[in-house]
Amino acid sequence: MKTMEMTTMSSKGQVVIPADIRDRIGLSSGTKLMILMDGDNLLLKPVQTPKMEVFRALVKRSRRWAKEAGKEKRRSQAHQKSSS
Image (cartoon, rainbow, N blue to C red; front, side, top):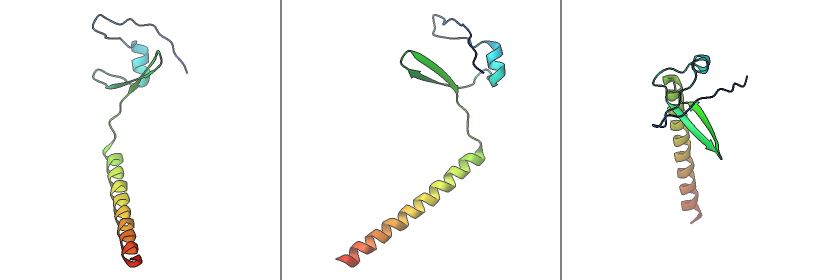
């Protein structure tokens, strides 16, 4: 559902997000927002801190990838030595 509201920027560059929009998407004081610009369009996107489970899964995948990359490098080095 698209919503259009009007707001005004203050002399300090501050913009108030209307309460009904804040409530609908769960914004509260201190919420970090990413600002994306495309031409003369701005998009505000809430930045969500990942849950620890997501972070742990990412670390696990990264370690698995690094281990496989190390194995591949050792295989390549062994192949080069046997070809010499």
